Length: 425
Image (cartoon, rainbow, N blue to C red; front, side):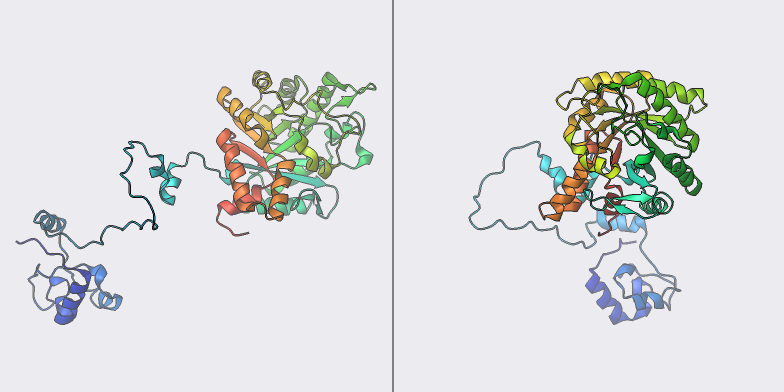
């Protein structure tokens, strides 16, 4: 039997129309024997003609017949190779460089660039920071456009619904505490009926699988605005503060927190909190340590949001010097030894080198906090038309992850997740 031929789409259709539907596909509907000289493909036929013969036995070539046709040199028709563009007038005519390696080959199309991309950001990488207060209404934060102090009962729940809708299932809570409840020793931090424990219980009731992180530090509860107890001479007391932090962490764990996050930078607090949690039966509650938290100028909008600015001085006696790099190794080793489960660098963008350092030297997951100042800078520049907001947001997050952060705390979490899903905002 001779191999089938492969006519062009136009010639197949013309031949079919000339012969009538009784000879389509090279098979006569009135005879039992097929003819292979007029074999064609169903895809070239109009839909109406296809439908009219759908119930008939259609003769198509077998794989063996198609292979035999190709071996015989009878190739099926295919479009010509794509043509390259013409260079502009005046382009010099030169011999191509003799380059064995051309990195641009892997950048020549969107599909290839996507296939070769080493770092990919997804909503699963994000933790959404949420500011909460005792009021019922959501109060805008002036220095952080698009961010609010959420009413702990309704606004908080609505925001978490929005987060889950776009694939963000991790949140961290930061309370704005009434001044009347603040004290020199921050006792409100471990009030079981305080705003944070209440909010945790509410969220766990509504969203049992929500991953809830909490902040462990005294500054929201301190009348002095510092992360620890302040002595009369202005010294931040370390060990006494750690005692309070342990009670705060246990209180949060009892309410249902999944991960407690000591942000205070007191010495020895990770180990003390680990022992306190274990003693109360909370062996499964994780600790995300603020390992390398720098005394940064980028925290201003956050402190406005919580009204937690220090009443005096600064936080340089306990937060890290921005000029130090190797000191982060010491903090990393201590937090690892004391039982931390996740290590954090804060802020993120100005400290990408430190993120990479922790990633390269520790087997633990690394998180990074894209802080309020970083958020507000991008928002302000975009509002002035200086930056493309979407591109700047996604690039900043991509760089943080590329540096080595598995987890990113960012106020852009919802906005970025929508961008990643292809939504236009």
